[in-house]
Length: 207
Ligand SMILES: [Zn+2]
Ligand SMILES: [Zn+2]
Image (cartoon, rainbow, N blue to C red; front, side, top):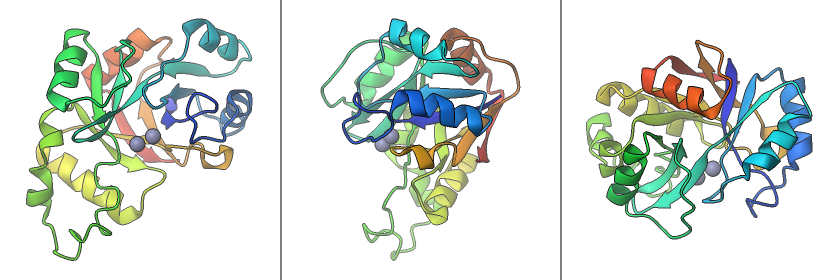
């Protein structure tokens, strides 16, 4: 199953221009099997997701993108409604308690502009970032990042033996499915999605 794991829609993500109905149409046109709605610390109402899914053709799953003191984290299988900035250790404890799954989103976004790139950060140094101690996987393909930024994430994930995911991080309709995650099995609901994450039966791919 080809799933875009990282999508923002309007109005729940104020930074997004994607109308959820257009999203479903476009995802179908792009032959995605599924999409994940990962707004910024806003969870979709399950009834609204069902309504949207009834437009047909693709599976729709809920995730959540948390802002933590160690960067953004995509979270699945955890449904507590939290609005404030999270300390990563606290988020980790809560999500583990719920049996959920955590992915470091775009971990090296902007690493060139921060000047670290010029200092020739090695993969070893990059892998020492605290965030990687508290996640199950690393987003190694983010549609909004440069190849260089994604490459660093991929090398770090390999070094740490963490699985890699892909998602578009789309905020506009034409950005959907630029990166995806391919799952080995068919997934029918969020419970199965989380189970497949934990089983590691997936890989990141270009869209
Ligand atoms: Zn983010
Ligand atoms: Zn995002």
